[in-house]
Image (cartoon, rainbow over all chains, first blue to last red; front, side, top):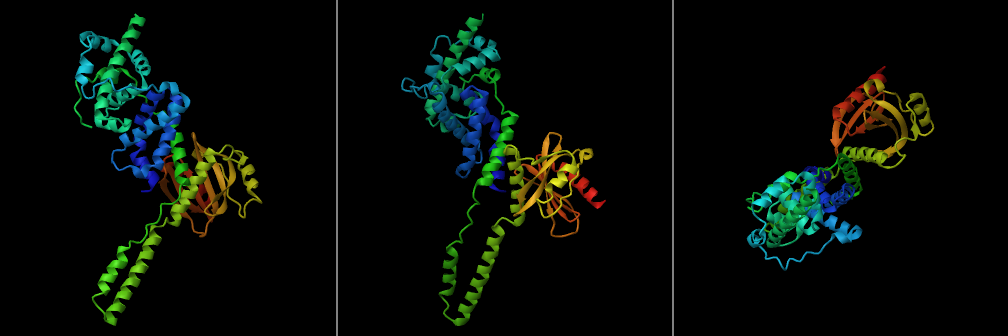
Length: 180
Length: 236
């Protein structure tokens, strides 16, 4: 099997995952296509560096880097710096559950949120939180894989997930109040 | 990947947030640009002969000083060298591989470059065929096979297998089919052989003293249909 055939066999099947991540990070179909196209050409160039038989996390790391480079060039305002200092790594229980709203009403709220509101709310939160939520909830990546893709420690992955969920909840709440 | 779901996971996100699937247009343009990138990159470096080989022979030869042993060793080394060269030859892409790559590249190029597909645009074989006169040192058979589902849309000159060839362009449903034609080295007809490369289907056959290579992003069997139609008309 030549290199292209191998690449088509192991990397191309993850095109949906690549596109989904790029689409959520760029929030735009057209930009996502450009980014994925570029990321795939990069992936093909660096294909020899792939050791893992599962190419998904490897590919997503390239997609994420390509997206960030693209955002820095075209929409630098999207790149909100995240201060992980005030988050206590790995102490997700505290961050996630200490909030007074995190009880039944939240579950009811989330369950009644429809697709449109959810999409809008998720697009609204900062890209650093959005990406971990997308990778965890939509791609079903493990904490370890997310840490690898985003280049952050596992503890930070967990705290950003908790903080991201909290932000998403608030964004949803706001939108639902406005809608009703 | 089988990490247990943490209690804080929200199945609601997965339920309500859109999972964006890659559009077909992206899939197609990606395939093209990957094929292009693959065609543009240099051949994989040939493996250098392992140094260990020489060392191993030295080890065999050293304990024996006799001429006979030395001669035997030399003969062995010679056989090894010849064998090694034969292996190198085999590891080089075969002429067929190179030809296949030529055909695929020419096809991809014709689709990528604007206005490269057809130099003569006509569905009329009597317009396309004379266009080649004086441009090639042979007269390619040109025929429309619309009844078999392959509608002639035009032709152009291309360069495949180290020579100028006739490229006939057919439309098959929404797919573009390139058929490259040049005089065959052998006169005997050969039935269609189909293969795939880089996701494209290719068919190769010989009819009426001409070599044919057809390439398109359709199922291989569909190219066989075209090959049968062309061979059938060449036999008449």
